Length: 205
Image (cartoon, rainbow, N blue to C red):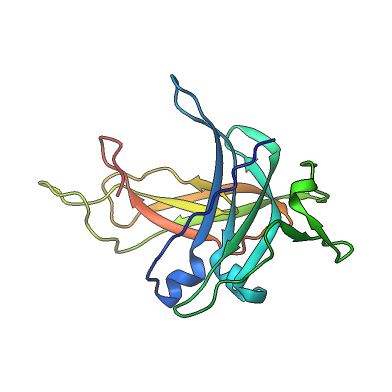
């Protein structure tokens, strides 16, 4: 059980379309001094979903951590508060150290709590995304035969998947199915798709 007690502030100028698709992704790592840090689990929240909530926030909510790339199943839980505000909107105020019990509606002091597993009933599902083809993609690789090496990335609920890369084409055909496991309840409702170019030196753009 780890207590971080940290606040992070991010400022961004987003279009309406960007606002509807952007997410807050929270990742928990195991810090190593010699080897690279290892992912324990992550979770994501749609910022548009948070903005629709009362006072544009979720306050002291338990979120499920998963790492479907290596370790199936729940990897733990993280309790967070997230606020999404527009220009001039006030920051919600809460009494220091005070939280509400969601079941009874009563208040209790956070400092008197021992961290316990949250009471969350989870159901496991799989999101199936079928990528067929793309047409008229822009040229990203210069040279004697300008072209691209496109592939698709798909993000949902803190997990991502991708197709294979198709070499030297602006009209790729994948016909591939990407399976992304996730758990309900989830605070992510947006499926994000991106088309990337894979270069020979493993640099993507």
